[in-house]
Picture 1 (spheres, rainbow, N blue to C red):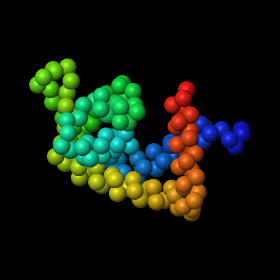
Picture 2: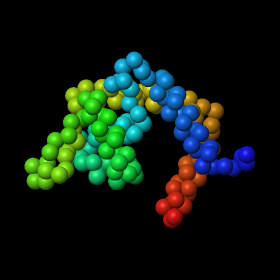
Picture 3: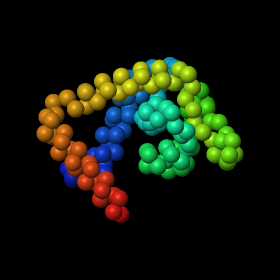
Picture 4: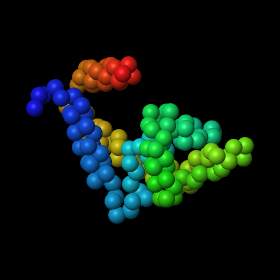
Length: 146
């Protein structure tokens, strides 16, 4: 296999990180274990706490498909992390609201994620990280052109 199979390398790295992150969480209490997508959703909602947030907003911001976001939100609702409230002007859409203890669960997971990030970039110079970031941005731009 060629050492430049970029898509394979990216997918392998993603799986390794996800596996380690989920294993570092308390799996006996699934409500305390958040997926990276759930973390992104909660972080976005906390950053926009004073705004009404709907599924379509999350689809756009996270660059995810409708079905993906819908599935993640269903899981979050089932685990009592969020509530969906029907919009008074349009009953077809529902506002997404965080539950009371979701922020605490998020903060616990965020600390673990930050610790993992430090471990992942250990022994990688600042210059190497800048190059990596530039390459990733160029790849994203190339994908947007397709």
